[in-house]
Image (cartoon, rainbow, N blue to C red):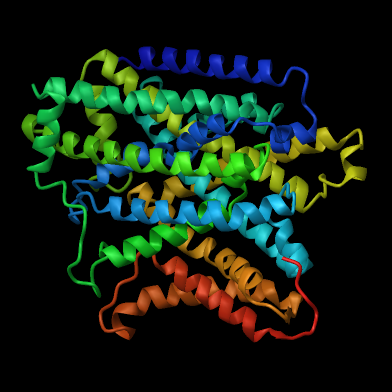
Length: 502
């Protein structure tokens, strides 16, 4: 595929996003609009746009690539997706009503009112670290594809590609914030969904299969196994581990994450926010079935045409993340290649632009107090917000550069592995706040508990096979992390007669 064609497409794509950004933020560049879009977002736009934010380029590339991985993944990821769906329902029925009742801008303000100042700052800090790392991972995935298939042809180094990508995201988010994101993510989700269906169509055409024949071929291919009940102790794919991990990863990475909750809080009321979540959940489950189907078709196509899984340029090992772009950009025609790039770009930038806005919001509200009236009215409040926005862009840049130097695994695996450690303490904090009554915390000790818990989890995961009779942890480790944090909070609390409000 000619790099010039793909580069021209990218330039046109971002020009469209920048035009939309300036149109939506022309008269509204204040902090209230940036943070919560004046709480006036349409639930159906939020629901549709959240699909692109939740899926990201990781789902677009890594999930199809994992289907035929050497470890025999097949469709096991769908077990995790079913756990996700249960987690989304819990968020809609338990957490969203709480957030709306308290009229929060940052969801971590709940921790301040319920547990105390240091607990609040700890929760907000956990989010900033977790989302920065997660967003860097997701953006890294699209950048390595852009580098491999476009910018290497021009002799442009990897770090410049990262810088260009972040500059483009900053250019259409810095002014309008969430109000702009709601519109651009809706557009990008449309491109993402369209590209999935068109990709299936193009691969089926190349294999001389009709759509019904394709799904029958997938069913008989050996890739379509969904439920894994064997080897509970040693298998990371056992259904109980996947479901539990899916539920609690979703609660932590969505329900306790400022990014996706910020969009929900921009709806007019709790009823519309819940309609958004229930609609989003249904579409999320269905679209993941299609992503897994794309993965099976890719491996069937590769087998038929003698295509090997591409090697990582640094490690020299097969890299399943590269299979989709390799086939789309080098073994199909120009239109499928552009469709692939459209979907990948839309998926990844829909996630990163949203995360960058949420990181800026959390820091401005949780650490600079910009939600308070006296700070909102200061003339330099918007200027400060711009500097914070730039600061997080720079931070993500350095995390991507570091990750590129050490990563040799599928990005989807890396994201959920990191989430098990970084988001676990948030589960413990919110669990304590929601379910423990009439006990007061020694608030200053909370940061220590939230540092020790991931450290203990790391040791447990490293030596679990020896300690627990061969048991191997997967994404359910996030629940253990939350429980250890919860237990630690109980140890540093004492009984009190003070009634809790929330």
